[in-house]
Image (cartoon, rainbow, N blue to C red):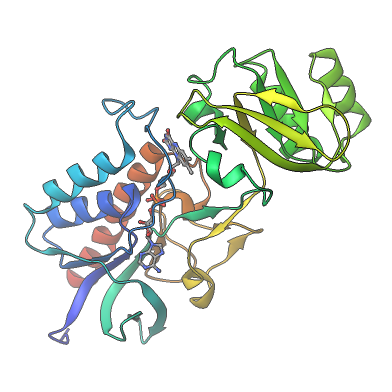
Length: 310
Ligand SMILES: Cc1cc2nc3c(=O)[nH]c(=O)nc-3n(C[C@H](O)[C@H](O)[C@H](O)COP(=O)(O)OP(=O)(O)OC[C@H]3O[C@@H](n4cnc5c(N)ncnc54)[C@H](O)[C@@H]3O)c2cc1C
């Protein structure tokens, strides 16, 4: 097979744990890799990364620094800080365009661009994000154990289910639904049985008196009724893909937030297109994202070997 001189083996979009680990494995496979990252990781507001063997409690940025230092040993991997704004698949080759108008071609494309959390819009939520506002009990539940907690969410799954789950970390958990709770009778009963009050009043704002990571103090101010003093809120209001590249390439999506992949090798139904990390909607954790990056890299290298050694 004759190849264009400028044809890369792999382009990776996203330099979080998924993209960086994929780049590491592909570098070790002597693959010619170009990784784009525009520096907006999902956990940018987080003060400590938890649940990653040997890295528990380090600042999340430190993981990315170590990863980049280690990648420097692999000369076939390059990192570019530009944002990818478009991608197309033409004659089995991926064409990628960056924000500054440059164009690159690759045999395989890995999207590891992550997701963006949708935050409640009232004043105070954004200020507390990563300090006393969290989405994941596995990431930050331990730090907030036995503290007065609120859960923000509606319905059985995103409201009632998360509130019940949080009682395992703190028995003092209140479900705040910011309007009609949309709870079934079954969930209302379970919440009552497990000592979780439900506040259905609209939330006006959070009044923050201390915004120290994991030691926050704030009042939830409702449109009627007494304020509620809490140390943390766990929320579940959904998320969105960080880019529309998967949709542009015709990738099947879970409704609404994840790309469908073959769980063995992270490949989508679009030949040559792989998705890893939070963008692919499995367990949304750093160690899982890194593992999915490794899995995608091995799938990609195997596919390239099959093509080249046929
Ligand atoms: C507040 C908070 C706390 C968390 N705490 C923990 C924790 O304690 N433990 C844990 O395991 N997980 C935690 N997480 C989850 C963790 O952040 C994610 O699971 C992890 O970052 C996913 O890695 P990723 O590589 O898929 O995506 P990301 O880390 O989000 O990286 C994606 C990268 O792609 C880049 N990008 C996106 N679009 C483009 C584009 N078009 N062109 C170029 N670059 C692009 C972004 O700038 C970003 O750098 C936390 C998340 C939040 C929000």
